[in-house]
Image (cartoon, rainbow, N blue to C red; front, side, top):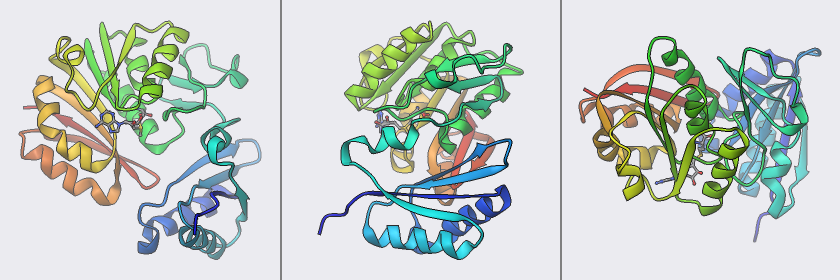
Amino acid sequence: MSYNAAQIIARGPRALAEAAAEALDADPMLDGATYSILEEDEDKGIWRIDAFPTSQEEEDGIRDSLVASGGLTVVVEPLADADWLAMALSGLPPVREGRFFVYGLHDKGRAPASAVKLRIEAGAAFGTGHHGTTAGCLKAYDDLLKSRRFDRVLDVGCGTGVLAIAAARTGSKVAVGTDIDGPSVRIANENARENAAAARFVHASGLNHRLVRQDGPYDLVFANILAPPLVALSHDIKLALKPGGVAILSGLLRTQERRVKAAYLSKGFRVMRSLHRDAWATLVLQRA
Ligand SMILES: C[S@@+](CC[C@H](N)C(=O)[O-])C[C@H]1O[C@@H](n2cnc3c(N)ncnc32)[C@H](O)[C@@H]1O
């Protein structure tokens, strides 16, 4: 029987929302369930979990877990097939990660004057800054920029292009992105224009494209994709980097961190840092 897609929303104070998110992470029956946690109303101190189950069993499991955590208001809403991503993301608050302020049109004018402002609309491509993986990459990059510059940057799995656009807007001379998804590449190129960023995006799988190779080797490679392709691409990412270059990897769950680290350590990388957001990990690795 086909599943009628639903979104589960749980609201409440920060401590309860974080405890509920931890309970979701810890439940082996919900391994791989997708959810986000963010502050919905700063003044009232309301936090919000949005979960997007992919089966009735997962929906029941997530709802029961959120209800069992206690103290949160939990609602389940049906999702229209075609529009679920836009519905999930529309009206989301802007994201502040280090110097970066990622916002949609509805928040134009709210950006602090000192921030690097990146306008990215919620839509058909992934990467508005709200997800723990994108936020982790922006945070890791912001911290690295305090002591180092990256002239040549590659963003593998660019989605909206937010990471390459962030690089172009903070002084990188070359900022290139790739995605296997054609519409994401089109959206990323539009976002680059919208943000007056000299970033360009190529429709390609991984790093295997003439237009990617021609600008290498790179000082920094972002790859916010899933754990299996991160492992599969470890050799290509090493070859794309200069010696001493840095890889910021995300899209892996905390539970997959050891496996991804092992693949890169065996290629001579060293781990500089790992960051955690929700169930997600971001790794900062340096090529020997
Ligand atoms: C989690 S999104 C990341 C988007 C954006 N970079 C961010 O950080 O928000 C992952 C993106 O990687 C793309 N992708 C997945 N596997 C890929 C591969 N092997 N080569 C290129 N792109 C890939 C997907 O189409 C998707 O747009």
